[in-house]
Image (cartoon, rainbow, N blue to C red; front, side, top):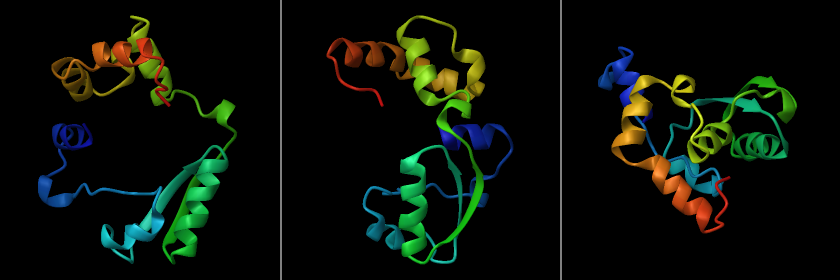
Length: 122
């Protein structure tokens, strides 16, 4: 989804790389990202502060874009997933490339199926 959105918005494939980012196992990050990379973070909660601490402890450079309470975050992926599940409008909140992929991959129906099984979507 990120790749298609970048390409559609004029970013050349030669200008970016998408790699795994195992933040839940921070000691693996050095195998995926350049050691001199700068990590831009938006912090809304304790998990955001924990990620910042993980990265700092590994010696990575951090730049916090902003830190605001979760209630001031605004639109989230969770809001969009819930709109999909509840057959509410969601398409205007994401790039058009995402709408195409969501429909192609039948993500709305998959989310509804997951929800029916009482599996958390967070």
